[in-house]
Every structure is written in C-alpha cells, then in structure tokens.
Length: 147
Image (tube, rainbow, N blue to C red; front, side, top):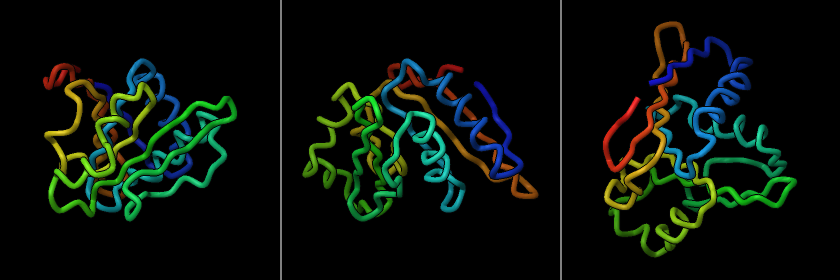
C-alpha cells in the first residue's frame, strides 16, 4: 500500500503525480471517501496532469462524463452516488465503458460492487484531524487487495 498525505490543497498536484505513477498501467481507478473528502477535486488535479482542458466536474446527475485530452485520449468519470439499485447502471452500458480500454475514474463504486471489474486501483481518501487528507493506494487483483 502506498500512502500520500496532503495537508494543503496546493499539495494535490504532487499527490496527482504520485497517483498517476502508481496507476500508470491500470484502467479502472476507484475513488473512495466520505462526502466532501475531495474525490472530485483530486480527479480534477489528475485530469490536468493528463492534459484534459475540459471542465471536469462530478457527473452526479449524468452518471458519466467523457473527457478528451490534447492527444485525443478518452477518459471516463463516473459518479454513482445517486444510484438506488445497482442494475440501473446497465441502462448506460457501464460494462462497455469499464472494458473499453480507456481510463475510468469511479466515485461511489460501493453502490454497484457487482459491476466493478475484479482488477482496479483503490484510491481511499480519509480526512484526518486538522483537515489533512490521507490517500491510500492499493491494487485489487482478481477481487483481492494487494499492496
């Protein structure tokens, strides 16, 4: 497991670099954390590093946003917070997105565990005393956590 501490918002760019380095060969990135932990803010910082100029925002109502960077690479950003029944995601063809070969950033994956691929990176954000963010990176392979 890799742990990153962010005491200030200004440190997010450094955290984004470390996360990209850790996840460089992975397509499914699951962001976990309580409401307000900074999942979307972190994804915005990561997207800048990938050269995405689009407005990056949480797709709470749309469920999925598609972004393209300067090289034409595609990225998908999901927010499943408003999902009430996991099978609702089948209507948007979620499995096609997840197995597209493009990077998928997923918020609130715990709402649809049965549809998340067995291999992904878990990016868990915890808020510590004083507002410091503790970001823990773990690789999940075949459904099992590997440091």
